[in-house]
Image 1 (spheres, one colour):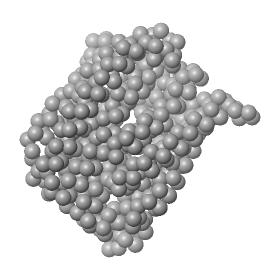
Image 2: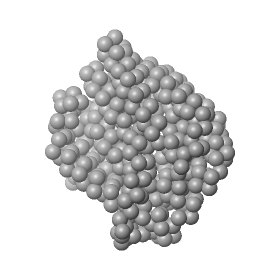
Image 3: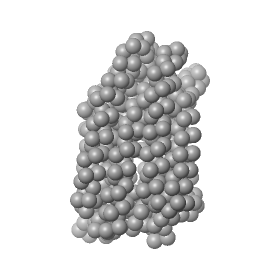
Image 4: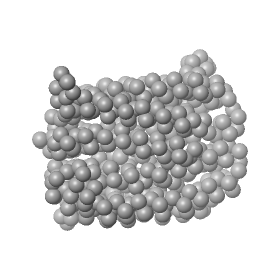
Length: 433
C-alpha cells in the first residue's frame, strides 16, 4: 500500500504547491498573498478530516471485524456530515474573509490578491470535502492505486488551468492569484467526481443511500465524533498554531512570508515518504486491532520508525546542503535566499521530531488512543510552537530563524512524549470494536 500512497502524496504536494511555484514567475507579492490565503484554507479543510479520518479508522476496524452493516452506515453518515459542514464553512468565508486577513495582519500589498484567491477557492469547498471523504473510504479498502491515479489527473488539470488563467492563454486575461484559485476549484470538482466514481465502481457494497441510516445510528455518530474530534483536533490545533505564528512572520515582512512558503514546500518533500508509510501502517494496525493482534500492531509501529525516520532526516540534510541553488529556482531576492539557507539547517533538526510524530500520532489514533495526541498537541503547539516562537522571533529579534527554532523544539518535545506513551502499552487495553 505504501508506494501508491507515496506517489499520491507527491502529487497532492504538487497540487498544493504548484500555485506558489507558478505564481513565483508572476510576482512575489502573489506568492505571499496565496500563502496567507492557503493557511486559512488548509486550516478549514482540516475540519473535514475530523469526519474522514474517523471514517478511515472505524472502517478499518469494522472491516477487520467483518461488520458490514456498520461499514455501509459510515459511508452515508460521513459523506452527509462533511457536505453539510463544507457549506457552512464556505458561507462563513464569504462573510468573514476581510476580518480574518486583518486578524492575521496580512501585508497591505497582498490583501487584494489574497481575498480574490480565498473567495474563489471557497466556492469549491464542498467538492473538496467530498473528495476527502470518498478518498478516506477508498483508503480504508486499500484502494491506494485508484486515489493515486485520480490525484495525477488532478495535477494535470491544475497545471493546464494555471497556465491558462495565471498568465493568460490566447484570449484569456492574466488573472494572477485569482486565476490560480479558479484552476484549484476546477481541480477539486474533477477530483471529487473521479473518487466518487471509483468508490462506487471498485468497493464491494459501496452505497450512499441515506436509508441505511434508518433508524438513525446515534451510537455510531457518537463514535465517529468521539474518534474524529480528538483525532482531527490534533491536526486542527497544529494548523491553527501555524496560522497564529504566520502573524509573527507577517510582522517581519513580505520577504519573510515568501521565504516561509518556499521552506514549507521543502519541508513537505522531507516528510512525504514517512507520511505515506505511516498512512499505510495505520490502516494495517487498525486491521490488527480489529483482529485483536496487538503484538503485530506493536511490531508494525517500530518497523516504520526504524526504517523511515532516518530517511526523512537524510532528505532534510540534502535539501539544506542544496538550499541556495534550489531557492534560486524560485526567486532572485537575495534576502529570501539567504534567510532560507539559514533556516533550512534548523529544519533538519525539526524533521527528527516530525518523523516520529507523524507515525506515532497516526498509530495511536488507529489503536483508539485519540485523546492523548490532541491534548499534548494543544499544549506543546501553543506553549512552545506559538509562545516560544513569539519570544525568539519577535521579542528577541531572531526573526524567522527564531520562529523555526521554536517549531523544532515543539516537534522534538512531542516526539519524546509520544514514544513514552506508546511504550507504556496502555493502548492494548482500549476497547475498540
